[in-house]
Amino acid sequence: MTNASRKCVVIHNGSCSTVAGFSNMELPKCIIPSSYVKRNNDEKRIFGTFEMLDETEKNESTSNVYTLIDGRGYPYNWEDLEAQWRYIYEEHLKVSPAELPLVISVPASNGDTDMKIMEKFFDLAFNKLKVPILQILIEPLAIALSMGKSSALVVDIGARGCNVTPIVDGTVVKSGVMKSKFGGDFLDYQITNSEFFNKEYDATNLSSCEMWFSSNTWLQQFKSTMLQVSDKNYSELERYYELQRQQQQQQQQAFPNFALNPLTQKKNFLFKKSKTVTLELRDSYKLAESLFEPKDALKAQGESQVQSHSQPHLQQPASNIGLSELMSKSIRKAGAGVSSTGTLGGGGTGASLTLNEKGSQHNTNASSNSQLTNGVANPATSGITSEQVYSLLLTNVIITGATSLIAGMEQRIINDLSIRFPQYKLTTYANQIMMDRKVQSWIAMNSMSNLPNWELGKWYTKQDFDLLKQSQSHKN
Image 1 (cartoon, rainbow, N blue to C red):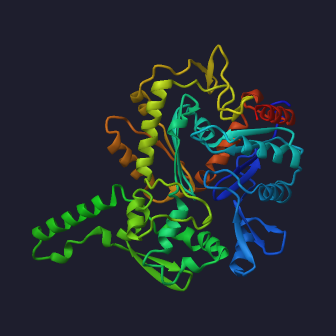
Image 2: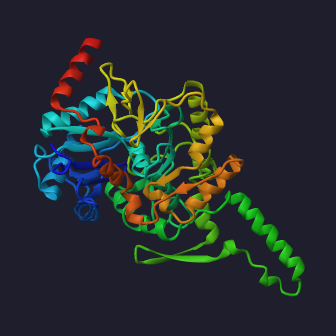
Image 3: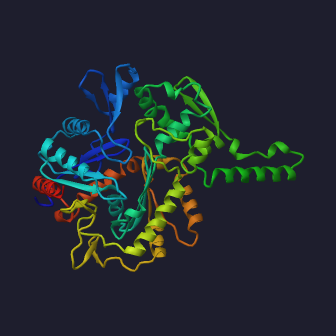
C-alpha cells in the first residue's frame, strides 16, 4: 500500500465518548456515547447520542443504560463493544471492516500490558470484524507526539477521572503514570448532592436512564456555564477576600456596605426549564474545588467512597488525592525513575504499542544503532538527573479532556505547579477550541496514522495474532 493511497479507520473509545472517522479527514464522522441502552428481554442495543437521549427521556422501567469502558480505560464488555463498532461501520462510516486498516488506542499503564485484553482486541479485529491490519496507539503518547513533543506531561481530565502521564524522550515513564477517580462524573455527584439540587433531584432513587439523561443534558450545561475554578486553593481565597473586606471596612467606616466580597456575586441557572437556581461565586468555586481537594468534599458530605453515576458497580481506586497532588507525584516519580534507570529514545514505531514474544509492552522499537524521536536521531537517555526530567515535563504540560474545559482550569494548574516547583519554568498547552479539545485524542491518533512512512507505525496482521497466541500458550 502506498502512502498516497492509504486510508484507515480511526476509532477512539474514551471513558465518556467514542469518536470515529477516517484518517484522510480532519474531523471525525461521529461522536457517540461509550454506552448504550438495552431493554429487558430484548437483544437490541441502542447506540448513538440522539437515539439514546430519546430512549432515556422516556425512562421506561424496562430500559437500562450500560457502559463499555471500565475505570482503567479498557473495554470490559466485548460483545457490546463489537456491536458498537459494527454500528459505527454500518451507520456512520458506511464501509465494511474488511476494507480498511483500523487504528485504535489504549491508555498508558504503570505496569505491563494485560495480554488477555490485547488478545481480545486482536480477536475482535481479526476474527470477528475481519480487519486486514491493526495498529494500537498509546493514547497520551500519541497526543504528545502529534504536537511535536517527545517529552511532555499529559494531563487528561475526563469523565471517569484524571490521568497524568509523564513522557520522556518518546517513552512513557511507567513509574510516573498516575490515575484518580475524580473527574466529570465526580462533579456530577457533587452537584446533584449539593444544597441547590438535593431536594429536587434525589440521585439515590434514580434509574440508570434518568442518571444518564441528566448527565448529558442539564448537568453538562451546568458544568459549562456555572462552574469556575479559582486561581488558588479555595480556603486561601476565602481568607484573602475576608481579610480584604475587613480592611475596607476599617478604611470606610462611613460606608460599610461598600466593602463587598466578590465571592458573593450571584449567578442564575434555569433547572429543567422550571426553576431558577441562584448560586454565589463562592459556590461555583467550591463545587469545582472538589477536583483539587476531594478529601474536603467527601468529608463535608460524610462520604468515605463515591460511586460513579455511570458506573456504580466498579471498584474505585483507594487514593483520594486531588489533581495538583497527582501531577506533583507523577513528576517526582518520573524524575526518580528516569534518573535511576534511564529510558530509551523515542523509537521508529511512534506512539504504537509494541508487544514482544513474551507479552511485554514497548512503545518504541529503536534500532541498535540509533533511536528516532520524530524522525531525528537521538541517543538513549542515560545519566539524566531528576532536575532535568522536571524541567522537560514542566515546560511541556499538555492539558486535555472534556472536564478540563471548566473556566479557570488551566490557570489553576499553572499556579499549583508553580508553587510546588518554584525554580522551574512552566509552559502549558491547551487547545482553546472546545470541540478540538474534546476529540483531541482522536485527532492525535489521526496524525499518528498519517506518518510520512507507513513503516513508522507498528501494524499487526492476523499472522502476528496467531504467533502471539502460540507464544502465550507455550509460556503457560
